[in-house]
Image (cartoon, rainbow, N blue to C red; front, top):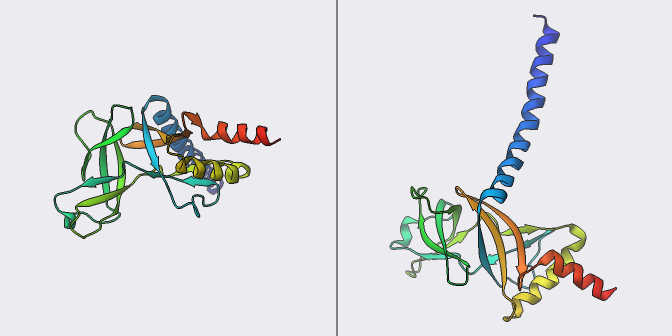
Length: 193
Protein backbone atom coordinates (compact mmCIF):
# COMPACT_ATOMS: atom_id res chain seq x y z
CA UNK A 1 0.00 0.00 0.00
CA UNK A 2 1.40 3.36 -0.88
CA UNK A 3 1.85 6.25 1.51
CA UNK A 4 -1.07 8.33 0.13
CA UNK A 5 -3.61 5.55 0.74
CA UNK A 6 -2.43 5.09 4.31
CA UNK A 7 -2.70 8.84 4.96
CA UNK A 8 -6.23 8.88 3.49
CA UNK A 9 -7.30 5.92 5.61
CA UNK A 10 -5.87 7.49 8.78
CA UNK A 11 -7.52 10.81 7.88
CA UNK A 12 -10.87 9.04 7.38
CA UNK A 13 -10.60 7.29 10.74
CA UNK A 14 -9.79 10.60 12.49
CA UNK A 15 -12.76 12.32 10.82
CA UNK A 16 -15.12 9.50 11.81
CA UNK A 17 -13.86 9.59 15.42
CA UNK A 18 -14.41 13.36 15.56
CA UNK A 19 -17.98 12.88 14.37
CA UNK A 20 -18.70 9.82 16.50
CA UNK A 21 -17.68 11.22 19.90
CA UNK A 22 -19.99 14.30 19.92
CA UNK A 23 -22.80 12.27 18.34
CA UNK A 24 -22.46 9.65 21.10
CA UNK A 25 -22.54 12.35 23.80
CA UNK A 26 -25.70 13.86 22.30
CA UNK A 27 -27.28 10.42 21.91
CA UNK A 28 -26.58 9.54 25.55
CA UNK A 29 -28.13 12.80 26.84
CA UNK A 30 -31.19 12.35 24.60
CA UNK A 31 -31.58 8.79 25.88
CA UNK A 32 -31.62 10.06 29.48
CA UNK A 33 -34.23 12.70 28.52
CA UNK A 34 -36.43 10.18 26.70
CA UNK A 35 -36.21 7.13 28.97
CA UNK A 36 -34.99 8.48 32.32
CA UNK A 37 -37.09 9.03 35.43
CA UNK A 38 -38.14 12.64 36.00
CA UNK A 39 -37.50 14.28 39.35
CA UNK A 40 -38.55 17.72 40.51
CA UNK A 41 -35.80 19.38 42.54
CA UNK A 42 -37.14 22.33 44.55
CA UNK A 43 -34.77 25.26 44.06
CA UNK A 44 -33.46 27.45 46.85
CA UNK A 45 -32.79 31.19 46.73
CA UNK A 46 -29.43 32.29 45.43
CA UNK A 47 -27.53 35.54 45.90
CA UNK A 48 -29.72 38.05 44.01
CA UNK A 49 -26.63 39.98 42.92
CA UNK A 50 -25.18 37.07 40.92
CA UNK A 51 -27.77 34.47 39.85
CA UNK A 52 -26.42 34.41 36.27
CA UNK A 53 -23.02 34.04 34.77
CA UNK A 54 -23.27 34.50 31.06
CA UNK A 55 -26.06 32.55 29.42
CA UNK A 56 -27.19 30.33 32.26
CA UNK A 57 -29.04 30.45 35.55
CA UNK A 58 -27.11 29.18 38.55
CA UNK A 59 -29.45 26.94 40.52
CA UNK A 60 -29.31 26.02 44.17
CA UNK A 61 -31.41 23.22 45.62
CA UNK A 62 -33.18 22.68 48.92
CA UNK A 63 -32.27 18.99 48.81
CA UNK A 64 -28.47 19.22 48.68
CA UNK A 65 -27.34 18.39 52.23
CA UNK A 66 -26.98 14.99 53.85
CA UNK A 67 -25.92 13.93 57.33
CA UNK A 68 -22.89 11.67 57.76
CA UNK A 69 -21.53 9.75 60.73
CA UNK A 70 -17.96 11.01 60.30
CA UNK A 71 -17.23 14.30 58.48
CA UNK A 72 -13.54 13.45 58.27
CA UNK A 73 -14.19 10.54 55.88
CA UNK A 74 -15.63 12.88 53.20
CA UNK A 75 -13.58 15.20 50.98
CA UNK A 76 -14.60 18.13 48.83
CA UNK A 77 -14.77 17.15 45.15
CA UNK A 78 -14.92 13.40 45.66
CA UNK A 79 -17.56 11.55 43.60
CA UNK A 80 -20.69 10.33 45.39
CA UNK A 81 -23.85 8.52 44.36
CA UNK A 82 -27.12 10.09 45.50
CA UNK A 83 -30.06 7.65 45.66
CA UNK A 84 -33.35 9.45 45.15
CA UNK A 85 -36.93 9.12 46.22
CA UNK A 86 -39.82 11.60 46.26
CA UNK A 87 -41.76 13.30 49.02
CA UNK A 88 -45.57 13.47 49.28
CA UNK A 89 -45.66 16.47 46.90
CA UNK A 90 -43.55 14.71 44.26
CA UNK A 91 -40.31 16.57 44.89
CA UNK A 92 -36.94 14.80 44.95
CA UNK A 93 -35.57 13.70 48.29
CA UNK A 94 -32.18 12.23 49.12
CA UNK A 95 -32.62 8.67 50.35
CA UNK A 96 -28.93 7.89 50.75
CA UNK A 97 -25.47 8.96 49.62
CA UNK A 98 -22.68 6.47 49.05
CA UNK A 99 -19.17 6.42 47.65
CA UNK A 100 -19.94 3.47 45.37
CA UNK A 101 -22.77 3.09 42.84
CA UNK A 102 -25.91 1.53 44.31
CA UNK A 103 -26.52 -2.10 43.39
CA UNK A 104 -30.30 -1.80 43.73
CA UNK A 105 -32.60 -0.73 40.91
CA UNK A 106 -33.26 2.60 42.60
CA UNK A 107 -32.50 5.74 40.59
CA UNK A 108 -29.37 7.64 41.55
CA UNK A 109 -27.33 10.62 40.40
CA UNK A 110 -23.56 10.74 40.26
CA UNK A 111 -22.55 13.98 41.98
CA UNK A 112 -19.63 15.37 43.97
CA UNK A 113 -19.12 16.46 47.55
CA UNK A 114 -19.41 20.23 47.59
CA UNK A 115 -18.65 21.29 51.13
CA UNK A 116 -17.62 19.58 54.34
CA UNK A 117 -17.86 22.11 57.20
CA UNK A 118 -15.62 20.24 59.65
CA UNK A 119 -17.39 21.88 62.58
CA UNK A 120 -19.06 18.78 63.99
CA UNK A 121 -22.44 19.46 62.32
CA UNK A 122 -22.08 16.25 60.27
CA UNK A 123 -23.76 18.03 57.31
CA UNK A 124 -22.14 17.53 53.92
CA UNK A 125 -23.27 19.50 50.85
CA UNK A 126 -23.69 17.95 47.40
CA UNK A 127 -22.83 19.59 44.08
CA UNK A 128 -25.21 18.21 41.47
CA UNK A 129 -24.15 18.01 37.80
CA UNK A 130 -27.21 20.07 36.77
CA UNK A 131 -26.71 23.33 38.64
CA UNK A 132 -26.71 25.46 35.48
CA UNK A 133 -29.69 26.06 33.22
CA UNK A 134 -28.55 27.39 29.86
CA UNK A 135 -30.72 29.83 27.93
CA UNK A 136 -30.62 31.89 24.79
CA UNK A 137 -28.40 34.89 25.54
CA UNK A 138 -31.01 37.49 24.56
CA UNK A 139 -33.48 36.07 27.11
CA UNK A 140 -30.99 35.79 29.98
CA UNK A 141 -31.54 39.24 31.57
CA UNK A 142 -35.34 38.84 31.61
CA UNK A 143 -35.04 35.26 32.91
CA UNK A 144 -32.65 36.44 35.62
CA UNK A 145 -35.23 38.94 36.85
CA UNK A 146 -38.09 36.41 36.71
CA UNK A 147 -36.08 33.76 38.55
CA UNK A 148 -34.90 36.21 41.24
CA UNK A 149 -38.46 37.49 41.79
CA UNK A 150 -39.82 33.95 42.03
CA UNK A 151 -37.28 33.06 44.70
CA UNK A 152 -38.48 36.02 46.78
CA UNK A 153 -42.14 35.04 46.32
CA UNK A 154 -42.86 32.19 48.73
CA UNK A 155 -46.26 31.58 47.11
CA UNK A 156 -44.79 30.53 43.74
CA UNK A 157 -42.79 27.30 44.06
CA UNK A 158 -39.77 27.03 41.79
CA UNK A 159 -38.17 23.77 40.76
CA UNK A 160 -35.86 22.14 38.25
CA UNK A 161 -37.20 19.22 36.22
CA UNK A 162 -34.40 16.67 35.88
CA UNK A 163 -34.32 13.33 34.03
CA UNK A 164 -32.24 10.65 35.75
CA UNK A 165 -31.05 7.31 34.38
CA UNK A 166 -28.20 5.07 35.58
CA UNK A 167 -26.42 7.87 37.43
CA UNK A 168 -26.67 10.36 34.58
CA UNK A 169 -28.85 13.45 34.98
CA UNK A 170 -30.07 15.99 32.42
CA UNK A 171 -31.78 19.25 33.39
CA UNK A 172 -34.92 19.57 31.26
CA UNK A 173 -36.42 22.83 32.46
CA UNK A 174 -36.85 25.30 35.31
CA UNK A 175 -40.46 25.84 36.31
CA UNK A 176 -42.01 28.69 38.23
CA UNK A 177 -45.39 27.84 39.72
CA UNK A 178 -45.63 24.97 37.21
CA UNK A 179 -44.81 27.09 34.12
CA UNK A 180 -41.56 26.86 32.15
CA UNK A 181 -39.26 29.84 32.74
CA UNK A 182 -39.08 30.20 28.94
CA UNK A 183 -42.85 30.69 28.80
CA UNK A 184 -42.83 33.12 31.73
CA UNK A 185 -40.16 35.24 30.01
CA UNK A 186 -42.04 35.09 26.70
CA UNK A 187 -45.34 36.14 28.37
CA UNK A 188 -43.62 38.97 30.25
CA UNK A 189 -42.11 40.28 26.99
CA UNK A 190 -45.50 40.17 25.26
CA UNK A 191 -47.13 42.06 28.16
CA UNK A 192 -44.51 44.81 27.95
CA UNK A 193 -44.90 45.25 24.18
